[in-house]
Image (cartoon, rainbow, N blue to C red; front, side):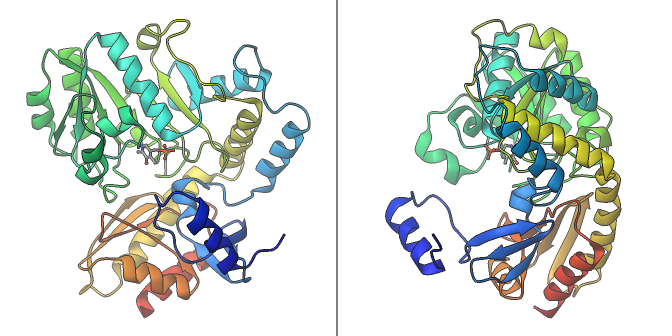
Amino acid sequence: MALDYDEIVRKYEKYIFNTYTRQPIAIKKASGAVVTDVNGKEYVDCVAGIAVNNVGHCHPTVVDAIKRQAGQLIHVSNLYYMENQAVLAEELASLTGMDRVFFCNSGAEAVEGALKLARKASGKKEFIATENAFHGRTRGALSVTHKEKYRKPFEPLAPAVFVPYNDADAIRKAINENTAGVILEPIQGEGGVIIPSGDFLKEVREMCDETGTLLILDEVQTGFGRTGKWFAKEHSGIKPDIMTTAKAMGGGFPMGAMLAREEVAANFGRGDHASTFGGNALACAAALANIEVIKKEGLVKRSEELGNYLVKKLKSLNKDYVKDVRGKGLMVGMELSTRCEDIVNRARERGVLLNCTSESVLRFVPPLTITKEQLDKAVSVLDEI
Ligand SMILES: *Cc1c(COP(=O)(O)O)cnc(C)c1O
């Protein structure tokens, strides 16, 4: 089976839901920070499956772990105990400082779990979220996702109020007797790489403590070294009551997790939540190998260093087009004075994959293993364009 690009696209057009805007290339394979299409053309990947392939594509340690596990045990459900799920849970508790973990398969599913837990723990129904927040597309997650276009056709959703990001006073004013929790990204991703200013997260933590409100941090995109820390919450030193993570968790293998402090987690008993595939043997093997690679290769530190390098290089580009460059680690946004779609197309033609979010923000979330030379290539292509 070796379909060419046109044959592949024809099948998509006939058989697959039209829910995505796809770039006009078909990817065949990938290694490290390089992706190869069906015509053999290579691209430097500054997208990494949207902040997923933090350890690089097809990292040999992850590939070996998946191969080995696949030959031994793929899936048995959560009706039984499994060694690698136990070991992974302990590892995650130690990396996040949280007490308990619920395993699932995606970011939206982790957010669903977090919202359900907050409702059960608080006995209340309403959430406070932020403008430009993105928490996923399932109905609970969508209820705290801000974009009108995503929400409108599916209303009524669960009750939520939106306040500006970086406005602690607005959150204070919005908290009332119906508030189940406040949900925040420690750095907004889809919203355009928006960094919390000053003591914003600390202030939110304090007012949640004062009012007895649960704080949920959505680290689906910011986890596993992406921002130059294991988790972005470390930049502000706060501990949430509930947190979510997913994207980079399994080294490319689909996996998510919802974590909570002991007192909050205690509100979920048998039968309160479940997921058939959550934390299955194959996913846990991938996640354990992924964590091992991040540690062994010092990728958290590398993310910080290369992120600083990239920001500096991007700041040196033509000021007429660049409104702002901001980031933490290798989660970098370059806000342009124009829409960025056309730039993404022209970069791809020159062998660099970029992602555009919020219409005018080029988002760089490459593998943390990317080399300086590969980043230089991306920047020089942008300069050329
Ligand atoms: C991507 C993302 C999600 C949704 O994750 P899926 O795996 O696509 O469901 C939720 N929250 C944040 C912050 C994300 O970046």
